[in-house]
Amino acid sequence: MKLLWVYSDFLHPTTRGGQIRTLETLKVLHSRHEIHYAGLSNPERPEGPARAVEYASRVYPVRHTPPKKPSPAFVLQLARGLFAPQPVAVFRYRSQELRATVDRLRRDGSFDHVVCDFLNSAPHFSDLSGVVLFQHNVEAVIWERHAANAPTPLHRWYFRLQARRMLAYERKVCTSVKNIIAVSHADAQKMRDLYGVKRVGSVPTGVDLSFFTPQSQADSTSDLVFVGSMDWMPNVDGSRWFVDEVLPLIRRRRPQCSVAVVGRQPTGEIVNLGQRDPLIRITGTVPDVRPWLWGAKVAIVPLRIGGGTRLKIYEAMAARVPVVSTTIGAEGLDVTPGRNILIGHRPAEFADACLQLLTDEEERHRLAVAAWEHVSERHSWESVASAFERLLA
Image 1 (spheres, rainbow, N blue to C red):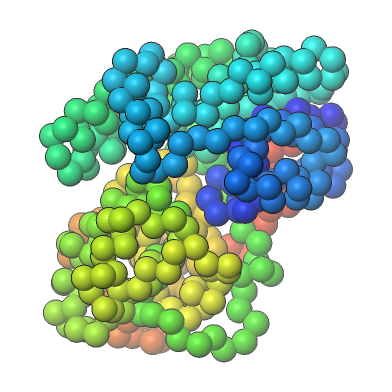
Image 2: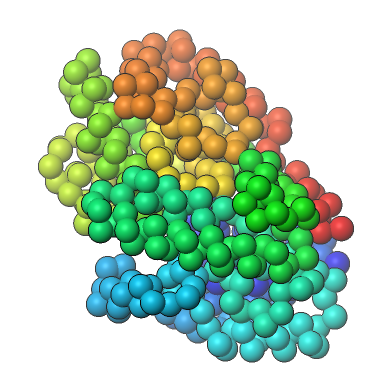
Protein backbone atom coordinates (compact mmCIF):
# COMPACT_ATOMS: atom_id res chain seq x y z
CA MET A 1 0.00 0.00 0.00
CA LYS A 2 0.95 3.62 -0.47
CA LEU A 3 -0.07 5.72 2.55
CA LEU A 4 -0.12 9.45 3.22
CA TRP A 5 0.22 10.08 6.97
CA VAL A 6 -0.44 13.60 8.34
CA TYR A 7 0.45 14.54 11.91
CA SER A 8 0.87 17.89 13.66
CA ASP A 9 4.34 16.91 14.87
CA PHE A 10 7.29 14.62 14.19
CA LEU A 11 8.00 11.59 16.33
CA HIS A 12 11.42 12.33 17.84
CA PRO A 13 12.26 13.09 20.54
CA THR A 14 9.60 10.59 21.58
CA THR A 15 8.23 11.87 24.88
CA ARG A 16 4.44 11.39 24.68
CA GLY A 17 2.20 8.35 24.56
CA GLY A 18 0.59 9.32 21.27
CA GLN A 19 4.00 9.73 19.65
CA ILE A 20 5.05 6.28 20.88
CA ARG A 21 1.89 4.66 19.54
CA THR A 22 2.26 6.29 16.13
CA LEU A 23 6.01 5.66 15.92
CA GLU A 24 5.83 1.96 16.76
CA THR A 25 2.84 1.41 14.47
CA LEU A 26 4.53 3.22 11.58
CA LYS A 27 7.80 1.31 12.03
CA VAL A 28 5.96 -1.94 11.36
CA LEU A 29 3.87 -0.49 8.51
CA HIS A 30 7.00 1.02 6.93
CA SER A 31 8.60 -2.41 6.75
CA ARG A 32 5.96 -3.52 4.25
CA HIS A 33 4.32 -0.39 2.81
CA GLU A 34 5.29 2.95 1.24
CA ILE A 35 4.76 5.69 3.86
CA HIS A 36 4.65 9.40 2.95
CA TYR A 37 4.76 11.50 6.13
CA ALA A 38 3.75 15.18 6.31
CA GLY A 39 4.03 17.04 9.59
CA LEU A 40 4.88 20.20 11.46
CA SER A 41 8.59 20.54 12.19
CA ASN A 42 9.67 22.56 15.20
CA PRO A 43 13.10 24.09 14.34
CA GLU A 44 14.06 23.72 18.00
CA ARG A 45 13.83 19.93 17.58
CA PRO A 46 15.71 19.07 14.37
CA GLU A 47 15.92 15.44 15.46
CA GLY A 48 12.31 14.94 14.33
CA PRO A 49 12.66 15.24 10.54
CA ALA A 50 16.21 13.81 10.63
CA ARG A 51 15.02 10.51 12.11
CA ALA A 52 11.80 10.23 10.10
CA VAL A 53 13.56 7.81 7.72
CA GLU A 54 13.09 5.23 10.48
CA TYR A 55 9.36 5.08 9.73
CA ALA A 56 8.72 6.85 6.40
CA SER A 57 9.70 6.48 2.74
CA ARG A 58 9.23 10.20 1.96
CA VAL A 59 9.04 13.11 4.40
CA TYR A 60 7.41 16.55 4.00
CA PRO A 61 8.33 18.79 6.96
CA VAL A 62 6.72 22.21 7.41
CA ARG A 63 8.28 24.62 9.91
CA HIS A 64 6.01 25.61 12.78
CA THR A 65 6.73 26.67 16.38
CA PRO A 66 3.72 26.72 18.72
CA PRO A 67 4.07 29.11 21.69
CA LYS A 68 5.61 27.49 24.73
CA LYS A 69 3.77 26.96 28.00
CA PRO A 70 3.83 29.33 29.79
CA SER A 71 4.76 32.38 27.73
CA PRO A 72 3.07 35.65 26.73
CA ALA A 73 2.32 34.18 23.30
CA PHE A 74 0.71 31.12 24.89
CA VAL A 75 -1.39 33.32 27.18
CA LEU A 76 -2.48 35.24 24.08
CA GLN A 77 -3.54 31.96 22.48
CA LEU A 78 -5.63 31.14 25.55
CA ALA A 79 -7.25 34.58 25.31
CA ARG A 80 -8.03 33.97 21.64
CA GLY A 81 -9.71 30.79 22.79
CA LEU A 82 -12.47 32.93 24.29
CA PHE A 83 -13.64 33.93 20.82
CA ALA A 84 -12.22 31.46 18.25
CA PRO A 85 -14.75 28.98 16.84
CA GLN A 86 -12.24 26.14 17.06
CA PRO A 87 -10.90 24.93 20.43
CA VAL A 88 -7.42 26.14 21.44
CA ALA A 89 -6.03 22.60 21.34
CA VAL A 90 -6.83 22.54 17.61
CA PHE A 91 -5.99 26.02 16.28
CA ARG A 92 -2.73 26.06 18.26
CA TYR A 93 -1.25 23.78 15.56
CA ARG A 94 -2.85 25.17 12.39
CA SER A 95 -0.56 25.76 9.42
CA GLN A 96 -1.72 27.01 6.04
CA GLU A 97 1.53 25.77 4.53
CA LEU A 98 0.98 22.22 5.75
CA ARG A 99 -2.61 22.37 4.49
CA ALA A 100 -1.35 23.39 1.04
CA THR A 101 1.25 20.61 1.15
CA VAL A 102 -1.37 18.00 2.00
CA ASP A 103 -3.67 19.27 -0.76
CA ARG A 104 -0.84 19.02 -3.28
CA LEU A 105 0.16 15.52 -2.16
CA ARG A 106 -3.41 14.24 -2.32
CA ARG A 107 -3.88 15.75 -5.76
CA ASP A 108 -0.68 14.28 -7.20
CA GLY A 109 0.13 11.24 -5.06
CA SER A 110 -2.35 8.43 -5.93
CA PHE A 111 -2.45 7.17 -2.32
CA ASP A 112 -4.30 4.03 -1.33
CA HIS A 113 -5.14 5.53 2.06
CA VAL A 114 -4.78 8.92 3.74
CA VAL A 115 -4.46 9.01 7.55
CA CYS A 116 -5.18 12.04 9.74
CA ASP A 117 -3.32 11.30 12.99
CA PHE A 118 -5.01 13.03 15.96
CA LEU A 119 -7.88 15.49 15.79
CA ASN A 120 -5.58 18.55 15.79
CA SER A 121 -4.23 17.43 12.39
CA ALA A 122 -7.69 17.79 10.80
CA PRO A 123 -7.36 21.52 9.89
CA HIS A 124 -4.64 20.53 7.43
CA PHE A 125 -7.22 18.90 5.15
CA SER A 126 -9.37 20.95 2.80
CA ASP A 127 -11.53 17.88 2.28
CA LEU A 128 -11.89 15.14 4.91
CA SER A 129 -13.86 12.76 2.73
CA GLY A 130 -11.76 9.73 1.96
CA VAL A 131 -9.59 10.33 5.06
CA VAL A 132 -9.08 7.85 7.91
CA LEU A 133 -8.97 9.54 11.34
CA PHE A 134 -6.60 7.86 13.81
CA GLN A 135 -8.14 9.09 17.05
CA HIS A 136 -6.03 8.43 20.16
CA ASN A 137 -8.58 10.03 22.53
CA VAL A 138 -12.14 11.21 22.59
CA GLU A 139 -11.07 14.82 23.02
CA ALA A 140 -14.41 16.24 24.17
CA VAL A 141 -14.48 13.77 27.06
CA ILE A 142 -11.04 14.92 28.21
CA TRP A 143 -12.13 18.56 28.31
CA GLU A 144 -15.31 17.68 30.20
CA ARG A 145 -13.13 15.93 32.78
CA HIS A 146 -10.89 18.98 32.96
CA ALA A 147 -13.95 21.05 33.81
CA ALA A 148 -15.17 18.54 36.40
CA ASN A 149 -11.80 18.58 38.20
CA ALA A 150 -10.93 22.27 37.70
CA PRO A 151 -9.23 23.92 40.71
CA THR A 152 -11.15 27.23 40.49
CA PRO A 153 -14.50 28.50 39.13
CA LEU A 154 -12.62 30.47 36.43
CA HIS A 155 -10.78 27.36 35.28
CA ARG A 156 -14.06 25.44 35.29
CA TRP A 157 -15.78 28.07 33.13
CA TYR A 158 -12.92 28.16 30.61
CA PHE A 159 -12.66 24.37 30.38
CA ARG A 160 -16.41 24.04 29.84
CA LEU A 161 -16.20 26.60 27.05
CA GLN A 162 -13.41 24.60 25.40
CA ALA A 163 -15.31 21.34 25.99
CA ARG A 164 -18.36 22.69 24.11
CA ARG A 165 -16.23 23.82 21.19
CA MET A 166 -14.31 20.56 21.16
CA LEU A 167 -17.55 18.57 21.13
CA ALA A 168 -18.81 20.53 18.11
CA TYR A 169 -15.49 20.34 16.25
CA GLU A 170 -14.91 16.67 17.00
CA ARG A 171 -18.43 15.83 15.83
CA LYS A 172 -17.84 17.74 12.57
CA VAL A 173 -14.58 15.90 11.87
CA CYS A 174 -15.84 12.46 12.90
CA THR A 175 -18.89 12.74 10.68
CA SER A 176 -16.81 14.02 7.72
CA VAL A 177 -14.10 11.36 7.52
CA LYS A 178 -14.39 8.04 5.74
CA ASN A 179 -13.44 5.91 8.71
CA ILE A 180 -12.22 6.21 12.31
CA ILE A 181 -9.63 4.08 14.08
CA ALA A 182 -9.81 4.38 17.87
CA VAL A 183 -7.36 2.99 20.43
CA SER A 184 -9.88 1.05 22.50
CA HIS A 185 -13.33 -0.50 22.23
CA ALA A 186 -14.47 1.98 24.90
CA ASP A 187 -13.39 4.99 22.85
CA ALA A 188 -14.98 3.56 19.71
CA GLN A 189 -18.28 3.17 21.54
CA LYS A 190 -18.09 6.71 22.96
CA MET A 191 -17.71 8.12 19.45
CA ARG A 192 -20.69 6.09 18.26
CA ASP A 193 -22.76 7.37 21.18
CA LEU A 194 -21.64 11.01 21.01
CA TYR A 195 -21.51 11.54 17.27
CA GLY A 196 -23.71 8.85 15.76
CA VAL A 197 -20.85 7.53 13.60
CA LYS A 198 -20.83 3.89 12.55
CA ARG A 199 -17.54 3.41 10.70
CA VAL A 200 -15.41 3.11 13.84
CA GLY A 201 -12.94 0.33 14.64
CA SER A 202 -10.25 0.03 17.27
CA VAL A 203 -6.70 -1.23 17.60
CA PRO A 204 -5.12 -2.49 20.84
CA THR A 205 -2.35 -0.75 22.71
CA GLY A 206 1.12 -2.22 22.29
CA VAL A 207 4.46 -2.30 24.07
CA ASP A 208 8.05 -3.13 23.10
CA LEU A 209 8.59 -6.01 25.49
CA SER A 210 12.28 -6.55 24.77
CA PHE A 211 13.01 -2.84 25.33
CA PHE A 212 11.37 -2.64 28.77
CA THR A 213 12.11 -6.07 30.24
CA PRO A 214 14.89 -5.63 32.85
CA GLN A 215 18.13 -7.38 31.95
CA SER A 216 19.67 -7.32 35.44
CA GLN A 217 19.03 -6.18 39.01
CA ALA A 218 18.42 -2.42 38.98
CA ASP A 219 19.49 0.13 41.56
CA SER A 220 16.69 1.32 43.81
CA THR A 221 15.30 4.73 42.83
CA SER A 222 12.02 5.18 44.77
CA ASP A 223 9.12 3.37 46.37
CA LEU A 224 6.61 4.80 43.89
CA VAL A 225 7.13 6.17 40.38
CA PHE A 226 4.86 8.16 38.09
CA VAL A 227 6.05 8.42 34.48
CA GLY A 228 4.61 10.82 31.92
CA SER A 229 4.89 14.19 30.20
CA MET A 230 4.74 16.62 33.09
CA ASP A 231 3.51 19.53 30.99
CA TRP A 232 0.34 17.63 30.04
CA MET A 233 -2.59 18.88 32.12
CA PRO A 234 -4.00 15.44 33.12
CA ASN A 235 -0.57 14.44 34.48
CA VAL A 236 -0.22 17.73 36.36
CA ASP A 237 -3.67 17.27 37.87
CA GLY A 238 -2.94 13.63 38.74
CA SER A 239 0.36 14.49 40.42
CA ARG A 240 -1.27 17.22 42.48
CA TRP A 241 -4.16 14.94 43.49
CA PHE A 242 -1.80 12.13 44.49
CA VAL A 243 0.50 14.35 46.57
CA ASP A 244 -2.32 16.27 48.26
CA GLU A 245 -4.91 13.52 48.76
CA VAL A 246 -3.22 10.10 48.60
CA LEU A 247 0.36 10.43 49.79
CA PRO A 248 -0.56 11.71 53.28
CA LEU A 249 -2.61 8.52 53.78
CA ILE A 250 0.35 6.37 52.74
CA ARG A 251 2.74 8.31 54.95
CA ARG A 252 0.66 7.52 58.04
CA ARG A 253 1.91 3.93 57.76
CA ARG A 254 5.12 4.49 55.76
CA PRO A 255 6.47 7.91 56.76
CA GLN A 256 9.55 7.52 54.54
CA CYS A 257 7.67 6.57 51.36
CA SER A 258 9.52 8.13 48.43
CA VAL A 259 8.06 9.17 45.08
CA ALA A 260 9.74 9.85 41.73
CA VAL A 261 7.84 11.98 39.20
CA VAL A 262 9.58 11.27 35.90
CA GLY A 263 8.81 13.19 32.74
CA ARG A 264 9.65 16.04 30.44
CA GLN A 265 9.15 19.76 31.02
CA PRO A 266 7.59 19.74 34.51
CA THR A 267 5.44 22.80 35.15
CA GLY A 268 6.16 25.15 38.02
CA GLU A 269 3.40 23.43 39.98
CA ILE A 270 5.10 20.06 39.54
CA VAL A 271 8.52 21.45 40.46
CA ASN A 272 7.00 22.92 43.62
CA LEU A 273 5.84 19.46 44.74
CA GLY A 274 9.46 18.37 44.98
CA GLN A 275 10.63 21.60 46.60
CA ARG A 276 8.23 21.24 49.51
CA ASP A 277 8.89 17.52 50.15
CA PRO A 278 12.43 16.06 50.14
CA LEU A 279 11.05 12.55 49.52
CA ILE A 280 9.47 13.61 46.21
CA ARG A 281 11.94 13.74 43.35
CA ILE A 282 11.04 15.65 40.18
CA THR A 283 13.44 14.47 37.49
CA GLY A 284 12.46 16.57 34.49
CA THR A 285 13.41 15.17 31.10
CA VAL A 286 15.49 11.99 31.39
CA PRO A 287 17.34 10.19 28.58
CA ASP A 288 15.77 6.86 29.52
CA VAL A 289 12.76 6.20 31.78
CA ARG A 290 13.52 2.49 32.19
CA PRO A 291 15.96 2.76 35.13
CA TRP A 292 13.31 4.73 37.02
CA LEU A 293 10.76 1.99 36.40
CA TRP A 294 13.14 -0.86 37.17
CA GLY A 295 14.29 0.84 40.38
CA ALA A 296 10.80 1.45 41.80
CA LYS A 297 8.63 -0.91 43.82
CA VAL A 298 5.33 0.28 42.34
CA ALA A 299 4.30 2.34 39.29
CA ILE A 300 1.35 4.67 39.89
CA VAL A 301 -1.09 6.19 37.39
CA PRO A 302 -3.14 8.66 39.46
CA LEU A 303 -5.15 10.16 36.61
CA ARG A 304 -8.56 11.77 37.07
CA ILE A 305 -8.63 13.19 33.53
CA GLY A 306 -7.83 11.48 30.26
CA GLY A 307 -8.97 9.49 27.28
CA GLY A 308 -7.64 6.86 24.93
CA THR A 309 -5.31 4.41 26.65
CA ARG A 310 -2.20 4.88 28.76
CA LEU A 311 0.86 3.29 27.23
CA LYS A 312 2.68 3.96 30.50
CA ILE A 313 0.71 1.12 32.12
CA TYR A 314 1.83 -1.51 29.61
CA GLU A 315 5.38 -0.14 29.74
CA ALA A 316 5.46 -0.59 33.52
CA MET A 317 4.04 -4.10 33.13
CA ALA A 318 6.72 -4.93 30.55
CA ALA A 319 9.30 -3.58 33.01
CA ARG A 320 7.98 -6.09 35.60
CA VAL A 321 6.77 -3.33 37.92
CA PRO A 322 3.32 -3.75 39.49
CA VAL A 323 0.85 -0.97 38.70
CA VAL A 324 -1.72 0.91 40.77
CA SER A 325 -4.08 3.08 38.73
CA THR A 326 -7.30 5.00 39.02
CA THR A 327 -10.28 3.76 37.02
CA ILE A 328 -9.76 6.52 34.46
CA GLY A 329 -6.02 5.80 34.27
CA ALA A 330 -6.68 2.23 33.15
CA GLU A 331 -9.77 3.05 31.09
CA GLY A 332 -9.96 1.22 27.77
CA LEU A 333 -7.06 -1.13 28.50
CA ASP A 334 -7.22 -4.90 28.40
CA VAL A 335 -6.45 -5.39 32.10
CA THR A 336 -8.07 -7.29 34.96
CA PRO A 337 -8.15 -5.59 38.38
CA GLY A 338 -6.73 -7.85 41.07
CA ARG A 339 -5.12 -10.17 38.54
CA ASN A 340 -2.61 -7.96 36.73
CA ILE A 341 -3.28 -4.45 38.10
CA LEU A 342 -4.71 -2.82 41.23
CA ILE A 343 -7.34 -0.08 40.92
CA GLY A 344 -8.10 2.64 43.42
CA HIS A 345 -10.36 5.47 42.34
CA ARG A 346 -10.78 7.30 45.66
CA PRO A 347 -7.79 8.52 47.69
CA ALA A 348 -8.18 5.88 50.42
CA GLU A 349 -8.55 3.08 47.86
CA PHE A 350 -5.48 4.23 45.95
CA ALA A 351 -3.44 4.54 49.13
CA ASP A 352 -4.51 1.08 50.34
CA ALA A 353 -3.52 -0.48 47.00
CA CYS A 354 -0.08 1.15 47.14
CA LEU A 355 0.42 0.06 50.75
CA GLN A 356 -0.62 -3.50 49.93
CA LEU A 357 2.16 -3.77 47.38
CA LEU A 358 4.76 -1.81 49.34
CA THR A 359 4.36 -4.04 52.40
CA ASP A 360 3.91 -7.42 50.69
CA GLU A 361 6.87 -8.44 48.52
CA GLU A 362 5.24 -11.72 47.52
CA GLU A 363 2.11 -9.99 46.26
CA ARG A 364 4.24 -7.41 44.48
CA HIS A 365 6.07 -10.20 42.66
CA ARG A 366 2.86 -12.09 41.82
CA LEU A 367 1.19 -9.04 40.28
CA ALA A 368 4.31 -8.08 38.32
CA VAL A 369 4.69 -11.56 36.82
CA ALA A 370 1.00 -11.79 35.90
CA ALA A 371 1.14 -8.37 34.23
CA TRP A 372 4.32 -9.21 32.28
CA GLU A 373 2.83 -12.47 31.03
CA HIS A 374 -0.31 -10.62 29.98
CA VAL A 375 1.41 -7.99 27.83
CA SER A 376 3.95 -10.47 26.41
CA GLU A 377 1.18 -12.72 25.10
CA ARG A 378 -1.21 -10.12 23.69
CA HIS A 379 0.28 -6.68 23.07
CA SER A 380 3.15 -6.62 20.59
CA TRP A 381 3.41 -3.70 18.15
CA GLU A 382 3.29 -6.22 15.31
CA SER A 383 -0.22 -7.21 16.39
CA VAL A 384 -1.23 -3.53 16.68
CA ALA A 385 0.02 -2.70 13.17
CA SER A 386 -1.69 -5.78 11.74
CA ALA A 387 -4.98 -4.69 13.30
CA PHE A 388 -4.44 -1.21 11.82
CA GLU A 389 -3.90 -2.72 8.36
CA ARG A 390 -7.10 -4.73 8.62
CA LEU A 391 -9.10 -1.62 9.52
CA LEU A 392 -7.62 0.31 6.60
CA ALA A 393 -8.68 -2.49 4.30
